[in-house]
Length: 178
Image 1 (cartoon, one colour):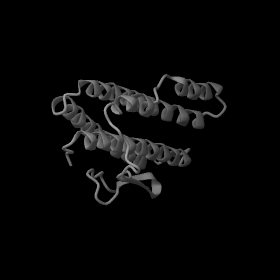
Image 2 (cartoon, helix red, strand yellow; image 1 turned 90 degrees about the vertical axis):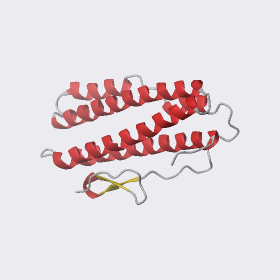
Image 3 (tube, one colour; image 1 turned 135 degrees about the vertical axis):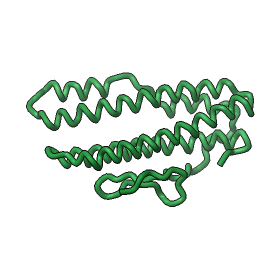
C-alpha cells in the first residue's frame, strides 16, 4: 500500500519502525533459543532465522526508502528525507552491532572461564548507538499535529517453536517455511 497523503505516509513510517523493533525482538529471542541448544548448537534453525530476519529487514528497509523518496519528491520535504537517510545508516549500524553481540554471547557461553568474553559483551554493549526512535522521530513530527496514531499496527511476524520466524496472515513478506 502506498499512502497518498503526507500524514498517512508519516504514520506508515512509524508503523514500519515499530515492525523493525518487533523484528529485533524476535531476532533476540531466536538467538537466546539458539544459545539454549548449546553446546551442540542447532545451527540449521538459527541460520534459517537469520535468513528470514534478513529478508524482513530488507523488505522494511525497501519500504522506508520508498517513503523517503515520496517525502522528498511528492511532498518536497528533503529535511525529512535526510532524517530517514540518517536513520537507515543507524539501522545498518545497529544490525551490525546486534550480530557482534550475538557472537560475543555465544563465545562467552562456550568459554565461561574466559573473563575476556564477558568483557567483550560489555564492550559491544557500550558501542555508540543512538536511540533511533527518539532522535529521528522528532524530525518526522515536523508539521504534524498528531504524528502517531493511538495504536500502531501489530508486526507481521510471530515467533514459532524452535525459534522459527514466520509471517503472520496478511503479511507482505513471505519468509521461507520449514
